[in-house]
Image (cartoon, rainbow, N blue to C red; front, side, top):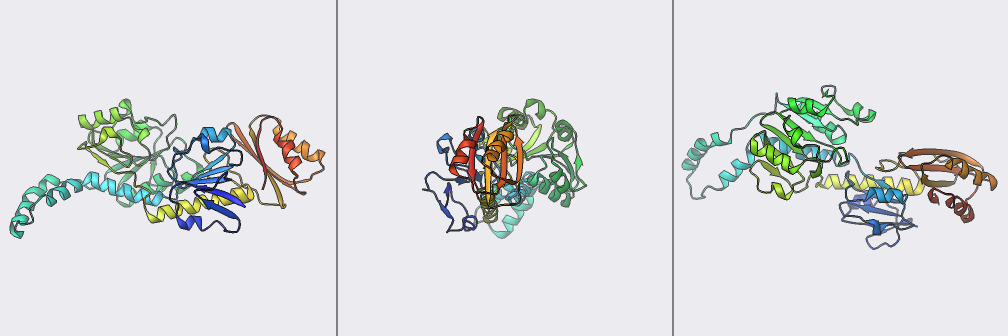
Length: 389
């Protein structure tokens, strides 16, 4: 029986994919094999010897101390792309709000007295509508920074709106490149993109090299009156630099799904309370993806969409499979195979991959692995976790 501890409200469409006869699932499950979480902040306290994986029903993993979990041999999954359409649609809303003075116009009309006659109201609207004049998106240039699942969808919808699309992603994968429309003009650096764009949209994770990516130096490259959209994370933008840009007129508007206290009430900021993935469809998609990945890992040892372990899939060639996590140092695989050979255990198939300081092995063996065999492998220096799948 696999044990899954849940945090937050997880979509029933995802939870229903755990077979009841093989999984115990709930918020009160103790010593779980895996954790399923949305936005709840996890800590080191959740780490225990039985824990093998954490699945985040969403893309970001800032609420998980990934480095600590990696050292403990715990695989951390996310659900990239599952909420991409929801974020894309909200970003389109942000583009329109920033371009057409929609919010000021709504606020103004709702401030008029209900006792105003229809004729007087029509006259008022004709007189004041010039205050809400905006601009069209067609013919404008948008720079998309980060061309993953969401960035690619944003580029597509911008093309459909008649916009010119510039793209920049220093870590663009081959898979992501295939998703991009050929109309996207890829840029060699961030500054060249920003200098040409009327709108700049951020779609990057928070890493050491992306934290405060939009700083005072970068702000000065924006075209005067440009719009910055941030539907990724607040830490990508330096608040002080942003406020300087807004107050000086370098930026005409900042649209974000990640507000900070410094921006509250600013007349040039459109702030949304982190609702980019808050749709029934996105929550269902994220939960389904997270559960499917957890099941494949717990039942077969396969890894898809991990943020800290290598992706690894191996078709089963035997009933017994060993999953082994070790530090990525030379000679480990030889020591493991030597133990199996000494016990006359035939290896049917195997796959080994590494990522940074971590290595992960799947080994299909002909005979069942005894607890003594697992303990002997576990005792090898630099081995972190061993279990039979």
